[in-house]
Image 1 (tube, rainbow, N blue to C red):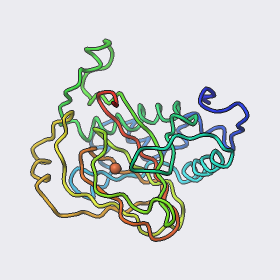
Image 2 (cartoon, rainbow, N blue to C red):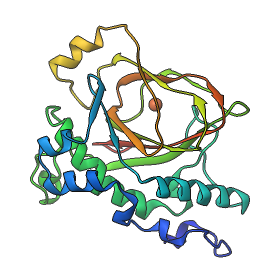
Image 3 (cartoon, protein in one colour):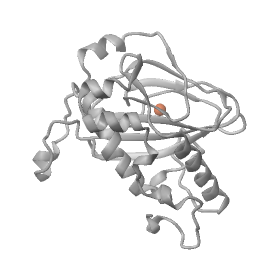
Length: 253
Ligand SMILES: [Fe+2]
């Protein structure tokens, strides 16, 4: 556990959650990552629209227990930094003990998947190979991450207006809670990005005005370019909590 980030008096409900375990991840995804080929990764992905991939990512038990732990942190009065100006609820996970877990998820899950799915995107950032002599210099070089949760409910933030993320690549996983209604995402083409140059196919798509609906399912992740325009429609019932990870090739400003 990253005890530097948590007060000494705090007693976790689920101490195991603060360290990465493969049991948190869907077995089929782990299998595909072990194989590590584009075919293997694509075999566990749906593509609801061009440039957005949807896949079973986190096991249900992990999602339920992570929500319980976050509730427990809130109830215990642990100070939690709020995600950003667009999301007034939820928490930055690095500031409440989850840095180690999120670093592992980024290194083992997000970066390898992004490198395969978005490998046609040439990065303008200096390669890791060039900087510190490690790595093969083939991937996107997603070295910087910002992980946080967002919470929507009829009495808190209900929706999120159209925007792009401050990220090259976004991972968005629905954690729960069981029974929420509404709150699906609408995607609408891409904005070009200063850091990641888009392949020609995405420029074609960028001209489209049509909105594409993508529903949330607990444990299921979406991965897309941060520059893909999207919004969350109004949550009608219950509470929706998502884990969001923004990844970049260059540091966050
Ligand atoms: Fe977003």
